[in-house]
Image 1: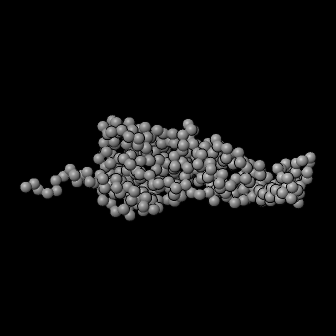
Image 2 (image 1 turned 180 degrees about the vertical axis):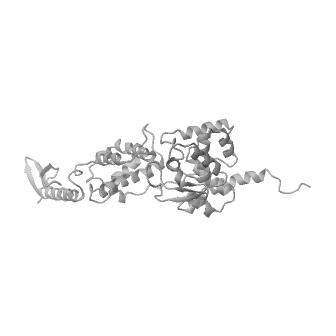
Image 3 (image 1 turned 180 degrees about the horizontal axis):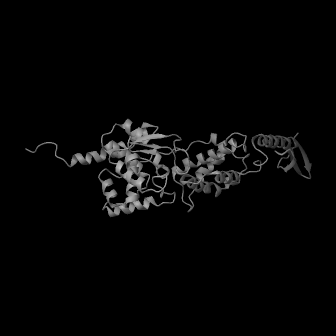
Length: 347
């Protein structure tokens, strides 16, 4: 039971900590009743921590949890991004807070302070994704029995980020053949597959020959990088357009592995390859990423007049509004084609 004692002019709060040991803490209380009230609060807090944690994690700070979680991550592109994001947490004083003390307002204050490694304020999208990292860390700790308490991230107010514009990073239907023409054979097959299917880099890297049925005209997307599942955690069957079939056939014939594109690794510099191809193709350079080929796939289909529902299925967008973000790009390209033609005879 919590109680208070006085030594000289100082009142001490006495209570049992999370390990059941007697603990004494000095206070600024001037009355015994205030010191007892504080001792009661501290003991209740320690008992709550005892119920929420294990002997291993009872002394963990948030930084310890994040460090442990990083060690559990598999190898791959997304894991590297998570490790990089985790460093932002470890650089902040919030990492020193014990798990028992951590509250939602601590995380929200950290998000408002969040900066990149060079000291600049972090982008809104970074602030939106960082709470998800902490959420997953607590969730895994709970699943493996290291944490039995509530997940404090559940009360963190969501960071609202305006929907980003796709901009002009995608490749237009006119630019794609020009880019393909200047690429070497391996990159040409990879880029052609990306713009015809909208597959992600990790999905292309993990694509196996058995996933491609040229006779039936389908590609089954089953995995990403070394994971036995995709980002959406499900398998999808995509159509092989007749224009894509020769590229896939060549890629399969050239590969000595079970994978179609065995040379694609997490550190393969595909963005640099694309930007160099733009220059060689005589296209004004821009900071295009490999993932922008996925945007290109959706835009090209919409520009060709393919129904938005079909495009949504091919792009594997859960929300049709995501698909329609590409509609203005397709409309802009279509308008430029119309402007080049005379619609009415001259008088």
